[in-house]
Length: 264
Image (spheres, helix red, strand yellow):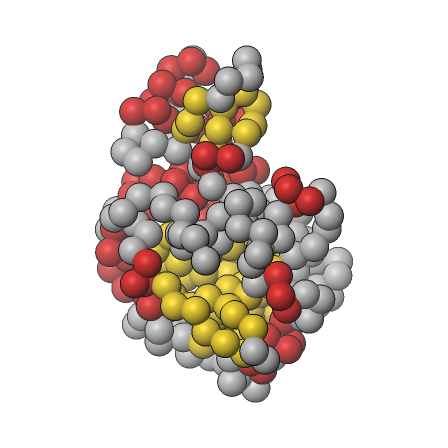
C-alpha cells in the first residue's frame, strides 16, 4: 500500500501499525499503545462498533453518537440514544468504555491521557475544525484535571490536502480558527500559506484552493502548547487509497469506516 506523506515530522510510518482481524487490516498508532484502539478500514463495512470493540479484545459498553459536523462533546452518560443524540465527540468518564466515531474523508481523532487512562474520540471535518472541536476537547480534559504533557493524539486516515478542493471561503472560515483577530480574508489565506507545514495548496480553478484539515488541527494543537512528539498523523489518504478507505468525495456514497478507543 502506498503511503501519502503529509510531513516527515508528523507522519513517521513507524508510528502506525497494520493489524489483522478476520483476515482484514486495520490501523493502530504506537502513541496509543496503552489503549485498545483501532482505525478500521472499508473492508469491515457494514459491521458496527460493537463488533470492533470485541475485535480489540474488550468486553465493555459501546458508545457512539449521531454526527452532525459540529463541536458538541459528550461523555457516555449523556448518550441515551446514539441514533438521535447529536454530537461529534465523546470523552470517556470511567474506565472500560468503548467510544467510536465514523468517517469517510473527515478526520477521526483519538486522544488518550497517559496518566488517567481517559479516551476521546472525535469526528472533525472542515466545519468541526473551524469550530475548534479538537482544542475544545483538550481544554475540557484540562478542566477535568488532565495535564497537557500527558496527552497523546492520533489523527487517522482522512482526505489529504493535495486532493481536497474547497471554496476559498471555506479555507478562510477554517483559517479563522487559527487567526481569530484577522478580518481580511486574503490575509488569512496568506497566513495559512506561511505556516509550516502549510495546510493550503494552490488550485487551478479560480476561487478554489486545496485544504489539508489535519494540518490545521495540528497547528491548533501547537497553539495550545502540545508538542510534535505528542501528535501522530496517519500517512494515508482516504480519497487516493480506494483499496482501503471509503471517500465521500470520491464515491458520493454514505459508506463509512469506524475509529475507536477504550478507556483504561
